[in-house]
Length: 346
View 1 (cartoon, rainbow, N blue to C red):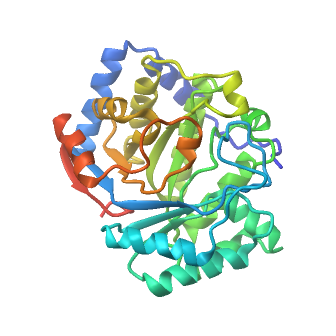
View 2 (view 1 turned 45 degrees about the vertical axis):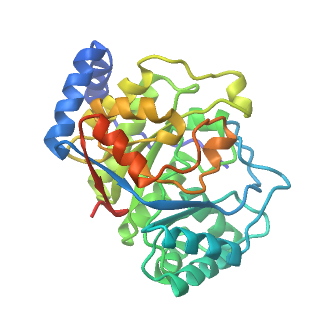
């Protein structure tokens, strides 16, 4: 599906400056990023009480980094999803995040019916759902435009979107790790149209595989360019590649060191003034490393993640849920001030 595109902005001087930042001594980079975090957010570290629902692991695509997809996997019907939303609501969740594989039998009608069912029964739950890839796939399956699909999703009650399926926004990389996925230009099209229709989203980057530091920086600068145009990103989420149980992991494995710290610090500095919330993934990195990153520019620990399955299938040893009390203990131990937030940082 991916096609060659020339969507990376002309970032000559910015790229040169960013590469110089990346080569700073880690101690210096940490101090600068931490100073900017404090300038933008003080010592407040936020989190959201949410439920992840991965409603199917069946998928028509074969991304090389994915440990979650199956040819013949599971599929949750709408009633099963509703039971999970009810459990989350009873536990104080304000957000439900719904994503799944690209099931061969599903089209836009299923997504709309799912939204209707959730909103009818739980009107106060914030529905954060469907990646740009899912939207693109649903539109194609139903033979409608991306714009029409997004308009219908919003009208039925979609509140915001996860900005996943971005991986690295470079078609050289995408051709090798997810050739059937939407291209860089197509990802940008879905996200920018969503933002312009009033559907905010997160932005993500999956790093730590075959990409270079220059390609990571270009990805971050591209996210910044989109934010300048739309203002629709609520946060930037860094997702380290997990190498277990997937083909890409046979060639690229995570290495301990300062790579995570440097990447998070660069995100803080390059996005400063454009996206103020930098999130790390405790479920992928583990609690200790995630806590350490609170001194490297990070001001958000994401969500409680009841029911997160994708990271566990790729080798994460963290349990699928961390209570608000546990999250707040991590934040306090790091010398920061915990604050529960909504999806859109209210």
